[in-house]
Image (cartoon, one colour):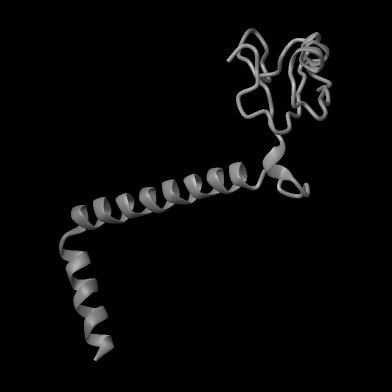
Length: 115
């Protein structure tokens, strides 16, 4: 019985070659796009999850001339002085761009003076 279903489907595919090509290419593009989106979302949500309190870690980035999205060098010290509720900050320096700095903010909840 299932052999007849495959034979009928194959016959339809061979009679309508253009529509078969369009449908198979659309299906493959759709599956590839959904797989790429899944991989991107999986990467974004699994970032820094190995820390015990990963929901308390924040990264400060900017788009002012830095290729990596980092911030300028004086910001960690200024944040330590000006921001209340900051437990720790850590610079994250890349070898390709030594100006990239990452700050780890803990329990800010809107206490930033520039907000």
